[in-house]
Image (cartoon, rainbow over all chains, first blue to last red; front, side):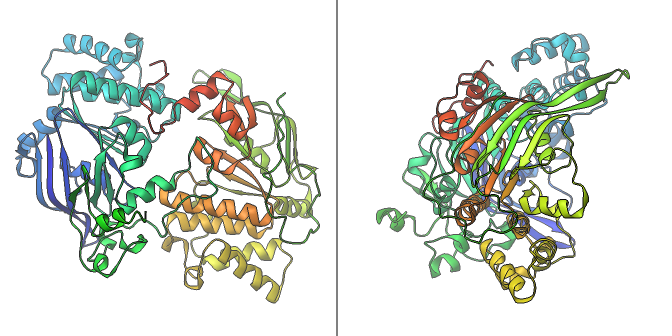
Length: 323
Length: 296
């Protein structure tokens, strides 16, 4: 469904090219949900912007981005518009920034249907009510007449999801869709997204900084650091099967709601961005196992125990169970 | 009225520094009783009404204890914090810090200084509360000058001690806010709060905006500081796992009211109130599936 190979992206920051993605590889199967997890500067949001070609002016992109076998980077403007309109749907973190505040909910949803699906206005009104019902909003008639400011953040995010579904895309990119919501509302919105995705057999890339949330929503999880993927694994048992020192560090950093540990196994230092990374492994500056080789030569993302890991020493570390 | 009291964790080292003027023996760090805050609001049609943000809230933080105030948007947790630090005047109820009433604004400079030495607050975003032109060292020294009563070598030693406590080396101590990461700025905010040598620290979503690996460092730092100084924490947070990590007891707020309170582990392991149960069940943990146990 989605295939990224050796993707490098650099942004023009005051006349200087600054790398934000470096050697990114990513695969998403048909109907699969993949979690993209990382801290600030890891490049998760830039990955979404690269897939949809919504990068800032002057950005330099290399490598290949394929959606359903089509080369996104080579698309002409008309093809790209059609691709964004109906093949891929993006759910952003802040629906208030993404939804026109001067239009009623009905107009917003209707536009998605008439422009992208070519249906009549009357048909659009009927389908809009169905769409709202599918995201758990029952009093559709009243909601369609309301303006965005009259809806809560959780309600508006449901409308956003409904508008994405209106275009009937086969791939959904959800970029921190619940980060701004209260935890009980997050659980509801994520539940809706998960149900709709399964019912319709959609593929999804779910971007979040919350590893546990990604594990709950996704089939597989890709952990990002400094603009590339450092580990990919099944979400089912990541707590036991994580092998990259950074993934293990992330798992140890979160306090548990179930028990109180005296101390957290914190990773020293701070997360670095792609432009700050040296020639070797980007995580080497914070890694307890880093050696000269790690600092000199960049490891590749390679198969290891039913997953992919980008670490020179992963075998050694695992064999000696020093982690 | 819901009152709550729990003993601080045992086996913790006693207060490291000698008892001075603001030390208040075994009096509770914070006692809040019947705290209420109403606002007059005007709707789109010009109709006026009362909105009660905090309603009859009561809790106690024992000396050296740690209490978490949890809730979602509109729970009243932030309004409660604002009343504790004097940014809002309560409509009704009483706030005592180390036995001193602070339901009304401070009268005079001396009382304001005493209040500052009793209780300090660290906010979610330290960037807006740091002076961009001040180095880390100067920012912390400013508070020492105002509140510590220390001079010369003694003050310089205390400054070095605070810098060391929050993990700043000589070079970093000369940096300005724009050169610091979010986590480093939060360390400066914590060091500034500690410079007033308070007995109570309010942490208002103080680790919420941090990256998870940085959040872990700050959580460890906060655990260490409480163990070393016997300071009491009042943690305001929406994050139940952070509350469990830092707090002995917890108060759950919903729409301005206390719905449940008690020992932190007991409440989170076996919530009695229906809302607390929903809140607890909404947190993704290993094995959690979206929509589980929720009315969606």
